[in-house]
Image (cartoon, rainbow, N blue to C red; front, side, top):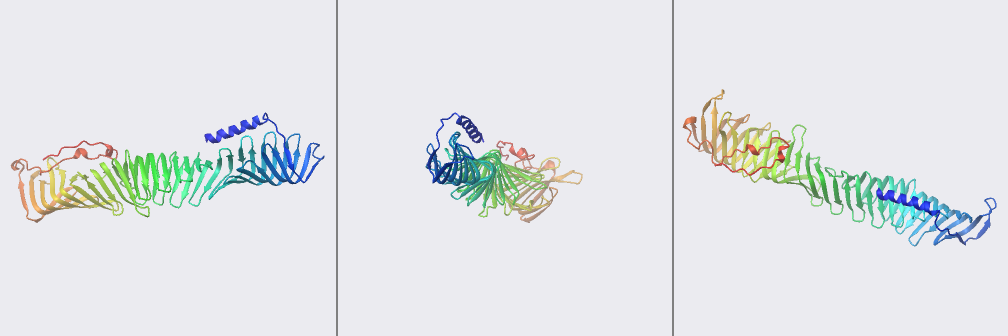
Length: 508
């Protein structure tokens, strides 16, 4: 916009100074008939037939003209042609020319040709002093396979730059650009936007309030909250660079990647995406939201990746380093995580810990299966451990090589323990009085729960079970080997997922 205002100011200054410029004659180079028309005044000469006029080095061609030798003005009619210089020519049906100010008004079927660029309109004002061409009412620019139209426009011919205002449309075989204000340089083939702009193609649509688009390289840079849309995804940011040929994009400041199909939002302060590879990532305060009208899941990690298939549909999300997530009925932490959107499977790796209501679940890795965004089941691989607080004191514990947990209404309903199954359970009456502490071992167990409390343990093979009164419990047997109570790590709400955690030493 600054360039646009600058050149209008320059034009006005040159027009004002044109009165003081050196005055030169308009020469008649050729005409088949030349006589004075007394009806128009003694200084007006009528020229007819293959007329050629010249001022300085500029030649004017027409079928007929009226030349005022005193005022240095002339009107030209029929097949008007101005040979401005070696690269630029102007055509029209009619011309009014002021020889002092060097301003030409061209009417009807106006065409300005400058090298490979063609400007067409019905009225054009061209200032030879400032080299500025102006059309106030609808014009069309053609350069190769690019066509640009607008209501108002300016062309600075010495720097090959166009300035377009109101209802600007740039059309190419591959995309279309719609803008309020646009500046286009025919040498660099770069278009600058100074207002709300839409860049639309078969693959996607870009929006922005300010920026540029290189029509030669198909690279663009947008600011003022730009966005890019496909059928299923939307990317928002404060600034965005995008290469349409390679499908590479870079976004900064309040970045959001939204997948409407799987209802996933990934946010951060910086992101990049590769459309051809089907990959994108967001980092710096990165957070993912698996949104739901009833209960959304909020996840934070140092870096979040989204992967897409050949149909541009999201298929997988990966989170790396310092993963923490919160949902009202489910919380967790781990070092890295993978979420397959197609089958709603979450895989947690490297010291994963999961909390479901009163239960703390941990293992070497945990896989969670969801159906319709509700917890369905989970598998805990190697060193599987479930801990919950007793209602008064102590901890109820389940340990095994592997475990499979099943959910009903997002609550743990039963747990199958496979391999070296062990339990520590504080058995109480309905009035909460302690009956004893149950220690059990078996190769396999099935544990049933109600409202996060163990209601029944079914031993599948080789059971060994002892109920101890509290005073007779052997020292150290109140905790299974590898026991850890990690409540301090548990995210308390959706903002607490950003809390940095120190490494907590394991308890034996």
